[in-house]
Image 1: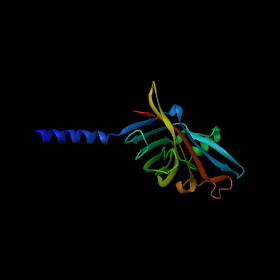
Image 2: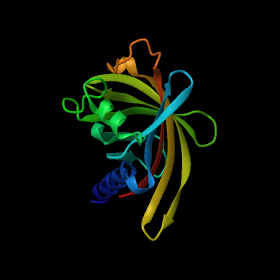
Image 3: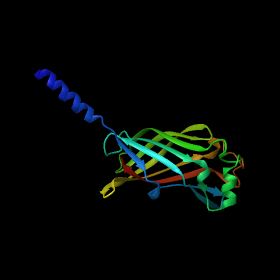
Image 4: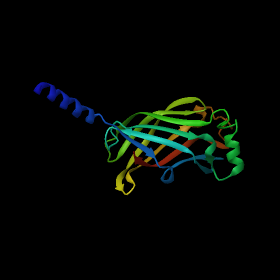
Length: 189
């Protein structure tokens, strides 16, 4: 009997050890931004307005965290309606055929610098999946009347040609490199 009780206690303690914490992106305090060279002399800034994201952690740290994001491609916004409509067309994102952009992480590594990580994952645009690495900065966590919130910043650069976004193949008018900066506030669930 005593042995059975000890085994039961050990099982209960081990279950608690592997508990996971779910986090959800707060879109009112987050943004998915990008910029790309225009004619080699300036940059066009844009963002996506409609997205959902989750993070799962084993505790309140980023160790072994996993991320999943889905972006509605039609929500692209560069503040110029004609350009946005062109970006939604088959020349660029072809949102009729490929309505979503997704990111799924596969590992996260601390860099050794305070609050700095490398976030590895797969980015899918137009049904093309490529590995990407984000530089991730942990902004901190706070507890308030609405629960626990965590802040993160992620940035990377991708080559648009890798994802079959090949309008202007010489990249003379529209650069090939897209700089992505994501500001996130996540709410603990």
